[in-house]
Image 1 (tube, rainbow, N blue to C red):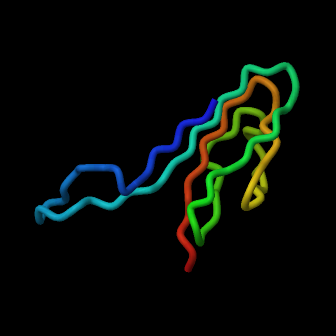
Image 2: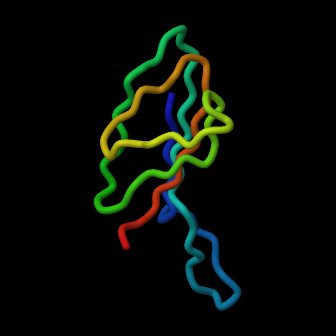
Length: 84
């Protein structure tokens, strides 16, 4: 299961009354017994950076631009970093 939390969808305002900017997050949850291929949403320029990975708590996962294998019984939280 996946849930995309788009930064642009927020209706929060900053101290000056303007739109508050934030990060786009993607939460992926797996209850499968084996790893599952997952196609990442195409959001244009930028890359996904792992924030939380229960399958690899002490190692950094490299995330391809278009898909990844979601390990069995894990939770993965990714943040979209805009292109520089």
